[in-house]
Image (cartoon, rainbow, N blue to C red; front, top):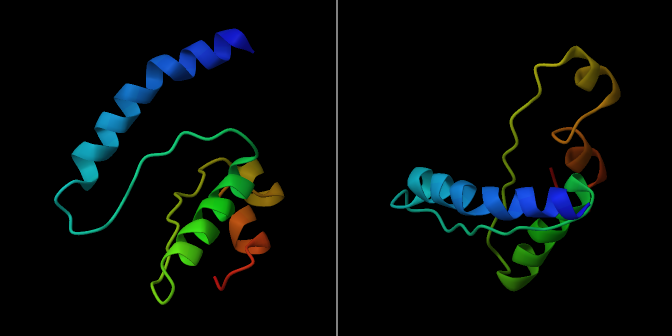
Length: 89
């Protein structure tokens, strides 16, 4: 577990820079957060937090779909938030 955490520590600055390169100057609010937990649950929690902090504004989660056939059959990160979100999807 410690090795995996160290790997994420090394990747985080690169991922943060890539996100900034793609999103800065696009006219949309965004932020980079590193979280631990079940991916779908964490995405829903972040969206709910943003919704609660900014009443009246829409919150959108964009997730690319998997190209693996197994994911399409049993579900993936892209499917789970849509099924379990407490907010409209």
